[in-house]
Picture 1 (cartoon, one colour):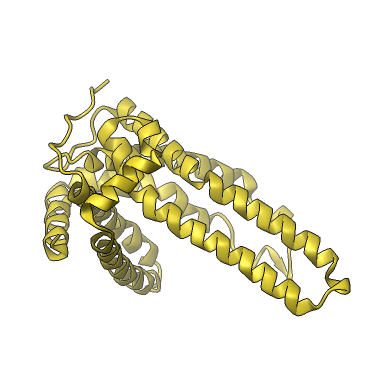
Picture 2 (cartoon, helix red, strand yellow; picture 1 turned 45 degrees about the vertical axis):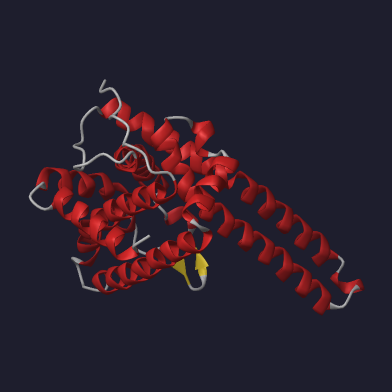
Length: 266
C-alpha cells in the first residue's frame, strides 16, 4: 500500500479527465447550478422581522423547483461517478444518459440503505431524549445530560461505521452492478481485512486530510465577492473525480480485479 502512489494516480486521472475536456467540465458546472442558485431566490434581510422569520416571504415555489431539478441532475453526475468507481480508464464521457441516470438512482439507493440504521438510531435517541426530558424534574439534570450525550455518541459511532463500510460498499455496487452486493457487510469486511485494517485507516486519514485542504480552499474562494460561488462550483468537479478515482483504487487494494466493461449504452 503506497498512499503517495494512490494520490498521484488520482490526481493524474483527474487532470486527464478535465483539462482540455472543457465540455465535460461544463456539464459538471451546469448540473450543479440549480442548487447553487437557490441562495439567490431570496434575500435573508427581507424574510427577517427582528428575530422572527417571515415564512410567507420565502419563495417556496422557486426553491422547490430548483431543488427538484438539482436532485434530478445530480443523478446523472452520480451515474458518472459510478463509472469511475468501475475502474474505467481513461475517464469516461457523458454518454448513455439513460444508464447514467439509472446508475445514479441506484447508487443513491445503496447509500440510503446504509443510512437506514442511522435514521432508526437517531429517531430512537430523539424519542428517548424527549421522554427523559419530561422526567427531568424527578431526576438529577446531570444524569439526563449524560444519558443524552451517550445516545448522541452511539449515533456518532454508528455514523462513522456506516461511512467506513459504505464507501467501499458503493464501489462494490459499481463493480458488481448489484445493490445487494453494495450493502453486503461480510464481503466488504473481507475486502478490508485483505488490504489490512491499518492500511485502510491510513488511506482514510489521508483522504480526510485532503478533504480538509479542499474545504479550506472552497471557504476562501466563497468569500470572494460576487464570483466566489462560481469559483466553488468550477473546482467541485476536480474534487469529485479525484475522490471517485481514489476510492476506486482503495477498493482495489483489498480486491484487485480487472475493471469491468462499461455498461450498455441506451
